[in-house]
Image (cartoon, rainbow, N blue to C red; front, side, top):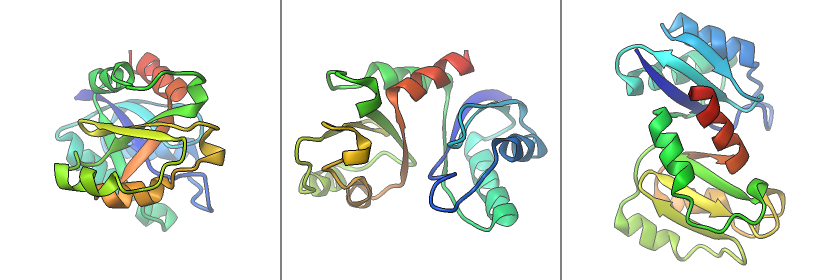
Length: 174
């Protein structure tokens, strides 16, 4: 067993309803212990058995079978989440305007070069390893950057959390 911060992309938005009690139950059914969730947006901390990637794929399948929609599951160790928070390359003027998007795979140099052509306005982004760091000038709700277009250019799905949430997940993971 290893402790993992497990993140589901885009749940409880746009009709993809996933109650956190059900998420904890599904994780337990897959062999995880001590599952804890934070806010209703697909944040789970648990001790997962075996290969973490296999657990993530099994959880994706369980969500799809039970709820009828597919959402990527991306997990990290508590150390990796702590390191991502520490590596945030932008000045944090307002924590809710700064995000870490945890990527399924590290983008290659060619994909990053392609993504550099995406219009950003006053918003900023930078890839650091397997994480995409974002700072929205006026908040994510009024983003000038099209993050879906950016992720397509980077060639990998990701799921973003603001720095307050990332810090809370670090705390929850111990």
